[in-house]
Length: 355
Image (cartoon, rainbow, N blue to C red):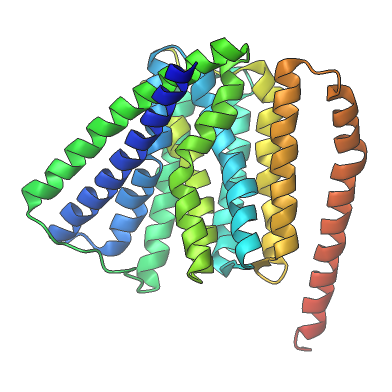
């Protein structure tokens, strides 16, 4: 057991290091060839921050561990919103840009609906993967066009180092990602077998949390430094890339596509979709995420994890816990968000100029 845990942790460390080398080397290499910072941000950096999830998903799929691949993507998206945004909002109320509310969050919801619909037959095949990845290319084209129209070049990208050194960083980063992904998947599978829980649960929890550590660091540090819009944009962008890039590319690479567990279709995919939809009213009200809303996100992540553990162990408390969540907690939350949203709409109508 200790060996499996050590292997999983070592894989996680190597994954994070590989992603850092890949992003840094590729960004500097692209900047050295005169590629605009905006293009680098939308492609190299965006793919780089999703590199741990991509490496894990492809590695797991090629080894026949599709449950871990699917659980990693779905679990990461739930983790990103509920835990990362929740924790960041507790540190300081987060600012939400209008572009996120008008463009990126609806696209995140749309990507969640699309992924759920394509997986509903129990498999994400290569055609489904092509659809998801095609949607990503359209999204990047829209962002690029919007950014260039607005004259936004983004933050300057450092170009230090010889191109050969930067290329070496890219190669080393990819190699570390492959090695780290293999170690983490092997460790996760061994732990799942030892604890008697499914690989899906391990993918939804341990693996998802581990591969989201770069996003945790980015959002929490951004919140502490006062860069509150970055904290939110990082999570939304990561969720879009997880669904369209990671799930899409993995389905394209896997020989038989990805088999989607029935348990994930019954519970985890709907939770992921509900979490994405919940962002719309919360982000819309004042274009901020207040501390109480962050606490609400964190509370739901604790409840979600508790449900997974109770279900995996077939605990006697599961029926009572499920009843309490569905009959009281969820309706009360929906009612509260509805009232807050209604008040915000009335406030904006009252401030609107009279024609």
